[in-house]
Amino acid sequence: MTAKKSAPAKAAQPAAPTKAAKAASGDPEDKKKTAAKPAAKAVDAKAGKVTLHHGPITALGWPAMTMTFKAAPSLLTAIKPGQSVKFTLKPTDGSGEVVAIAPQ
Image (cartoon, rainbow, N blue to C red):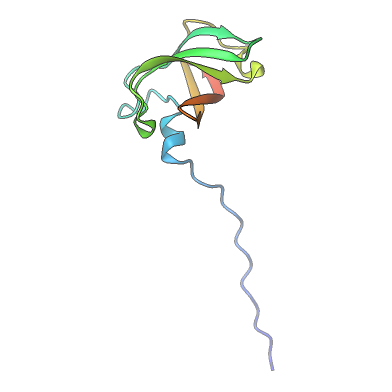
């Protein structure tokens, strides 16, 4: 009897971002989901909060609005009020937490 050789295991591929995560990124290049460039309105790094104006995020059912989000203080050091930003939002119970943000 001969033992069968098994095929080498495939390397695990990173999971593709969900539709909600893509939409929540605030990427102004996706005009279907974001009508206006996201902008920082207020930043309180000590409190870990940032107020952002963003266009509609259709995957979450959100219209364009200005909203305050939690964020790690270390993420907010380079963000100034009035700057256009690109951000990634982790949706949480009707709100969200900014998990990445950068000036544009």
